[in-house]
Structures are given as C-alpha cells and as structure tokens.
View (tube, one colour):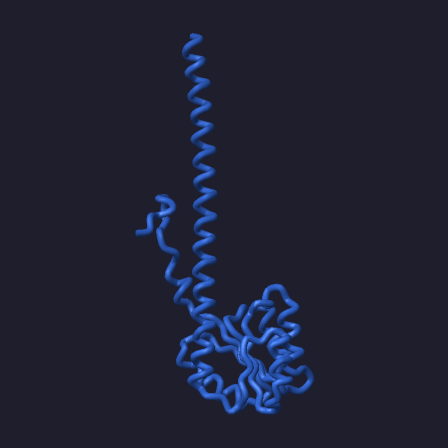
Length: 189
C-alpha cells in the first residue's frame, strides 16, 4: 500500500493518471506518400499521435518542437537519407535516445542493416513489412515512453515533497529557536 508523500492540499500518493494515459508522439518519415499512408493505417489503432514527415529535413524540424516515443525512418530518401537523418537525430541531446526503426525496400544486404544499427537503430525492417510486427514493435516503445513519463512525474512529485519537507523543517526550527528565545526572556524577567 502506497502512503502519501505529503498531506498538503492537492497531494496524492499516485502521480496523475494523465501522465500514463496521454498519447505519445510517433514520427513517421518516408518520402513516398503511399508509404506514409500505409504506416498511418498500421499504427492508427494504437491511439497515439502520428506525425508525418516527407523528408529527413522535415523530420528534424519536428524534433525541434516535439519529443517522440519512436521514429519509423525510411532509409532511401532524396537529399538526406535515413542514415544521415539518424546521425543528426543522435547528435542532439534531446533526441539521442529516441528509438529509431529503419524501414527499407531498397537494400536487403546485411551491410546496410549493420550501418543502420551503427547509427543507433533499434531495428531494421525490410519492406514489405508485416503490419502486426510493426504495430507490436511500436507498441513496446510507446509503453516504454509512457512508463518513462510516469517515472519522471513521480520523480518530480518526490522532489516537490522533499522541498516541502525541508521548508517545513526549517520553519519548525525557526519556531523552536523563537520559542527558546522567548522562554529565556520570560525567565530573565
């Protein structure tokens, strides 16, 4: 049984359920609109926010303002391919741990897969992909992101409770000192 950390107004033993139930963002990156549509159809049943990007540059712009539970990233794209995009994603502190799943139809070689893993991919899937596999893999990262958000909320609640406890202890110590001072005055009177 969990005990409340604080009995102050608005205090609760459990973090707000919204932290665990709020939808997370999933970034879908592919230069082919049909592939983006297919990915959206595969993942729409998860009930999360699906954000589409038609290029690596567009994906990087989304990463400036949003955090993602997972990124599904096409390997073969014009201008900036998936490997370059992944390297830039990993270069930013805010997104360096965001899971990346590479998707490709172009190259089935182990060399390309190894290159994907070398730039930080958690998986490398070859098209045509099985929708159930993609949904299952993405669902795992969605759940991990939600658990991380819940832990962060609990940690923040703990920090706030510790600060409140320190403030109360300081106030109590000041009151005790004041009371001792008044007792000494009273004794000398």
